[in-house]
Image 1 (cartoon, rainbow, N blue to C red):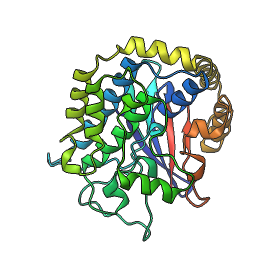
Image 2 (image 1 turned 90 degrees about the horizontal axis):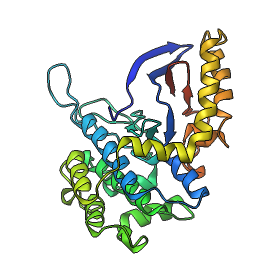
Image 3 (image 1 turned 90 degrees about the vertical axis):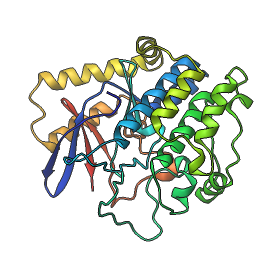
Image 4 (image 1 turned 45 degrees about the horizontal axis):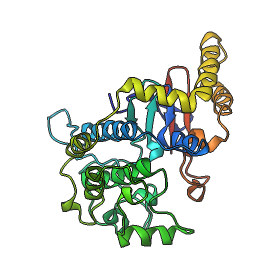
Length: 304
């Protein structure tokens, strides 16, 4: 339940589209932005619940097996607030496995090209070393640190400066910024952010359970109430537009879907906040489109 389900793959006009489960909600990045605009932090127990849910989604992905029962060795490689969707039901779901890597899969990248969001990458990922599920655990640790403190962990003027900060590995405990965060939560997050992968948690589930022991977590109903408080207006308007599209016959093919989606995305203050492509400095090149469409009953992620 903590992973957005892929329902189908469609080939249309030389392009591939992933048809995904539609989840009525907002990305964690958008919720953090809205909370910041209201000068609020995510409630501690809600933050713990959201990170625990995302970790359980990652664990399910890490444990995925093929039809012969053998582990795929799947690593997400792009865990970030933009790729954690929080439903109006209060559940956190991991999405966008577009750059996920499976052991043994044919995989090619341009020389020197990094895939993912640099501020959330594990040090070994930045150093182009072999990565494992511990890289995702590290990224989840960065998300947890930011969710608990309400501020960015690795922030700098340039991408190279961000890389330097990550490799430096100087991470203050969250309670240094927010004194009411329990010391036990500090320990969980700092262990996930260990420079050495072998010093991190053995699995995302292990980290989720440790976090739940360190901080009591909020119920999905209470998290849902917080989501409604922070993003209720935009969720209501999007639901209204989606219902109108479902009642009409104006969406018959991909081109008409795009028109409908443009109207849906205008609900938010900016296109970027809906498509959640990452910080402004990480805009995709024109030759590498990365759009997430919201359609009749599915999110359709455009893949190159």
